[in-house]
Length: 328
Image 1 (cartoon, rainbow, N blue to C red):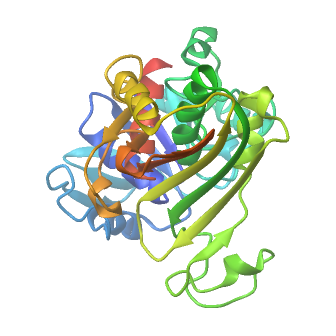
Image 2 (cartoon, rainbow, N blue to C red):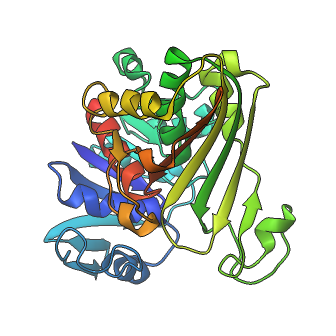
Image 3 (cartoon, rainbow, N blue to C red):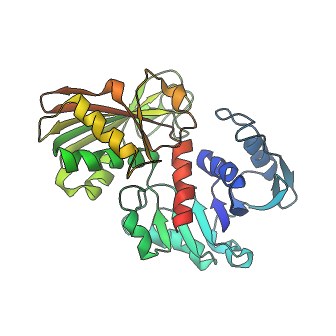
């Protein structure tokens, strides 16, 4: 399969390196940064280091870069319509730019000649949203434009789906304790969300997220019953979602943990894992699962459940992107 990546930020670069060790062919990438800078950032990585999946050989070339002996074309074109996707025979464009969120904007890649487009976040209304392990049948519709959701969505949807099916939920509070991101400031500065403007490596910073809106679309029974927030912490990778749910049925910690253990060996195998050890965020780096339920942190008081799950917000999510491309 011939793949192009639009946007070479954290996810785009990690995706590029994961695809380099797959059976797929990376034909081209598009980003505003210079080719030398891109080759450097593909070589050196502050989280996964230079020897990620073995040492990748990367050098800048006149028209892009060479990745482990394969030539990859590099473009710096802000207008997708000007990209030569038809000429290059691109099967799928994975858009990781975060700039093209509507069906109309993403369709520009199709007009340029790509056969299909996968958006690496939650798109606007009209862009079908696929969460592997939840609505797998959507693939059979053969959409030419599809969204993968985000790392938080991929984690929480799998958990809530089965909590609702087995126990019912009356109300829900979700706090995603998350590494800081590029949308935060390294030093105090102006931002429309004042807290996002505070120095990311100096404070624990609560920020507003729209995860509740996405979850309400998936689970209409939870309309106006969800509150979500993300607490950004001074680490560069890793996340822990804390779910506080008022259930409709009495449960025990053991019954909840056992439910997810069974799912991890059956229909959610490869997507869900259950941890039994006292781990920390660094211990889930390079974990491929969308959610790692921490059984040691499950607590129940009456019908009130506290459920916690870890995820590598970059590596696990990028693996989902590749799996969706293969399904497409």
